Image 1 (spheres, rainbow, N blue to C red):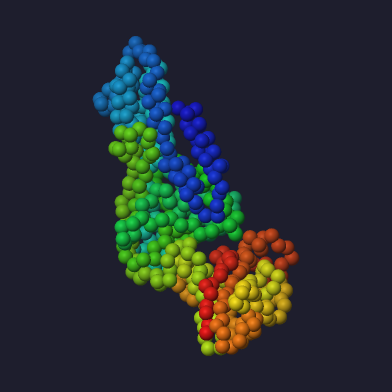
Image 2 (image 1 turned 180 degrees about the vertical axis):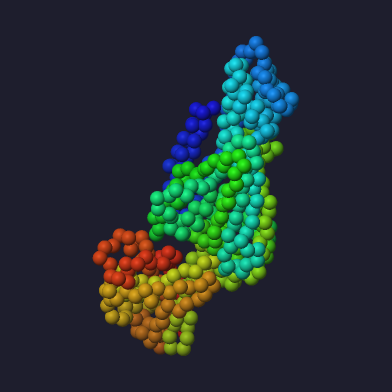
Length: 454
């Protein structure tokens, strides 16, 4: 059993290594981690043990307690494969109540009984929450869409043996993680176990913002891809697990539509045995907690990862470039415009001269790093639109070589690549760039739709 489980774990690790790890959760990473967290149980290996030849003992093993359990233990050494397999299934379905008898049977002088009992104990050890009672609650039951709340799990081991939990409960860390990394780790550990349902009855998908600019966040995701954290909860012990900013953190279940949301923890082992899978053997389900979103998000907020939208507005003798935040969280925008790339952003005006699109000549004085100002790092709330630049129509027409009576086609292109990753690669930065830049500082190139001005 141990060798077969080792092969399975090696196969899953090969899946992780063969898939490129992105800046956020992709389907390959998510499915691979799901297989690990849910502890895929190779029940076929248990049945394989049942096919071994039977060497009957002179006396059946003595098992005290429940007569039915004692009978099942004896059936593990039966000559019939069907009897042995059926006993293994029924034994596993007894759950924690069967463990003391299995531990005793594992010491039996009957080699076959001891071998199969040890195999079933290995199966139990791979399951999560065995013998545990789980209660879910929330720190607030009524919130606006942009107000955060915490999800709280209280887990109590009611069994006479230790139980495995899929969490890292160790508090003996040399260096505590950054708040964002700690928040992502907590919600990520729950993501494969939760059923979150929105007001329309559809499941709410877990979302992680880009982590490419933050090595601590990247480390959290890499560690979960390599191995899911686990800990043992001893008999009679309780554990309280709190996922802060459950709906508003870096890793979150976004809830920006008005209505009632329902959250349940549901763990079901991924059995290869069809009978076990149908019966949900080893499954654990918590209570369902309800949360009311009393006020929905602005209509412009369409999804957690939606890109901002750049648009142009004609106003008398000028045209204005505006950026709209379509995400469910605030973003930061660099409006330190200047030549030469980072740390500066650029806003280019592009006009059509009747044959091709051409850039307008840049305007404004040249700039250096010492001119960079944190005052020009602007926070944009979800659904908020901000003017980031304005151009005179006369200047645009001259750049395109157009007469005043000819229609003008113009577009704007915003670009900024300055973020924490860029900051870590540079040395001898001026004081304004020595402090960490905002975590959600926008790094992108956005092109607005062309605007026709007659």
